Every structure is written in C-alpha cells, then in structure tokens.
Image 1 (cartoon, rainbow, N blue to C red):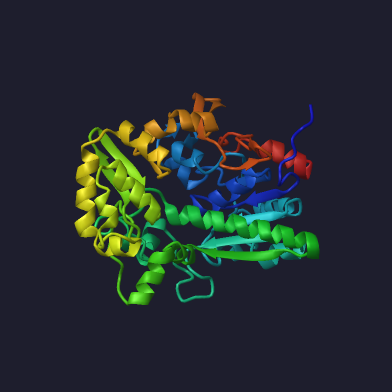
Image 2: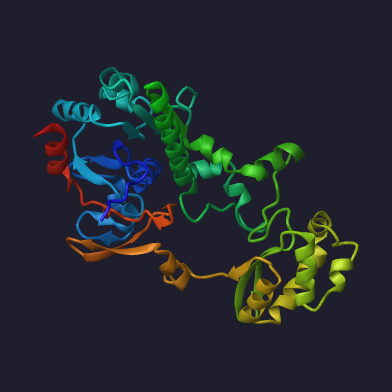
Length: 385
C-alpha cells in the first residue's frame, strides 16, 4: 500500500514554545505533516502539563489540546551543554518556534541571528505579547490581559452585563494560527530564494486584528459599538431564539430569507412592513421587531422549526451543550474526536486535526507526548547519540 505523502513531509520544526500560542502554531504544522520536536524543561515541561484535568502522569486535557502530532525531548536551556545540543538540532531543522519574552532567547545564544549563523536558511518564528520594537516589548503576554487591552472584552457579552472574556483563549489560538500561516509563507519563499526569514507575531497585534468590523465601526462612529450578546450587531434577525423546547440559532442573511421566515412564523405582513423591508431598517428597528419574532418562535418546537427553516434555505441549528456537540453524530461522522492509547491512563480522547487534504482528514499521527518520551529517539536519529 502506498504511504500517503502529507503536505509538510520532510519539514522539521524545533519548538521551544509553551502554553498556547506557540504550541498552536507548531501543532498546525505537525497536523500538516511536519516533524515537530517539542523542547521542554526536564522537570516541569510545558506549563500546561499542570493546567486542566490530569491524564496520566505528565499530561492534562489542557496540554493535550495543543500538542498532538509532536515528539517531546527534554533540555535544560540554562545549561551550556544542553544549549549546545539545541544548536546541533537546529542544523537538522527547517523551522524554529519560540515564545520566550523579548530577549530571552538572545540571553541563551539562541536568538535568530545566533541560529542564522549556523543555519542560514532557518525560518525562525518569535511570538511575544507586544511588538518587539515597542515600548512594551518586555511585558509578558497573557491572553486574558490582551482580550481586555485590545477591546475584545468590550464587544463580548450582553449590554447590561460587565465586559466578558471569550470562553477559550482566543487571542493565543488565533496568534498561533497567524504564525503558522506566516511560517508556511516563509517556507514557500525559501524554496524560491534559498533564504530563511525571521517572523515576529505579537498577541496584541492579533487581538486588534480580530476585532474585525467592530473595530472599524468604532473608528467610523467615534464610539464603542453596543454589546449585543447572542445577537448580531448589524444583521436582524440573526441570533439565538428560544423555541418551546430549547434554544435555536437562526441566521436570516437577506431580505428574501426574511420574507420566508415571516411566512414560517405565520406573520407574512412583517416582511411588507415599512419598518422591516431591508436589513438596515430591521437593524434600526430591532426593538420593535425582535420581540414579535421571539414570541412566535417560542410557540413552536425546535424540530418543527428546523425542518421548516431547512426547507426555506434559512441557516439554523440547535444550541448544544459542549459534551452533546462532541458526541453528536455530526462530530463522530467527521472523525473530529479520536481515542488514543495512553501508557498510564490506558486511553484518552484527543481532538483531531481540522485539515482535510485530497478528501481525507489528516488526523492524529502521534498522540500528545509524555514529557521527554522521544529524547533518546530524537538524539539518536538526528545527532547519532
């Protein structure tokens, strides 16, 4: 049987990062086929090995969510001998990912200029909290702090409640994915030029980017947009509605859909009401419209509405609990949840890669590693030790 070739087969990543942003970047590269070697401290490893719920001796649910498709080795970078080993490994790698505070890698002789001297075509990705050439370069970057500073908390949640953080570490995760995109672009460019690149990603920069149209609205109007909770700030009706037996998401994206939605609810006259004929009018007059729609939806069951909405081509779906979503037929059919063998726990759940290539999900080649599980293998394979 022919072995499937993955997009990044032959690319090797030396990953000095920890927690979320850097590991998300390297996991994306690993999902696409790169050989990712995760460098961890011999005693404590990645900080996230101590976050979340324990899985075996050295892993947790938190760690496992960012570290599939990697091999783990342990080096104490405070020791010159281990720093020398790291430099030797760099010679055998294509990419370095690190998220030490600004200047941290330079103190150990592992900054971009240091490693470029021994591997001229290295693609080196630095992830920091703030711009490395700015006045806050030395500040550590924490997702929740940057959610506050970038204005993300101010646009999240209901208007009558205090600002609210996102449920996951959204800034860290998006920064990691932006970083992976940049690494891929640098690798592509290296094929043409033979030269490496130094990529710098800042959490604050990425936090500002994902304010998206909210950010532009604020700049255009000169004031903060109102928080809309589960509703959309500029599309109406578009949000969560309570049916008789539970909540639904209903997303009416245009005027034709609105007319069909009104017909389903037995209120066709609403589509002809001058206050609601266009989306801009519906948004302006949402306080008059939405309560009427909510009352009509409340009188119908989820299943009844879902059938009718699907037939009318109106996007909709049930609001599921997290466990219900992960164990749903939809998630199972897609292969998004896998069960991996574990030397201590027997087995553990690991989320699969979202990437599908040539009609097939790339999946989990390597479960999240125990601390230092591949030290001997990697050093023997790459350095002949």
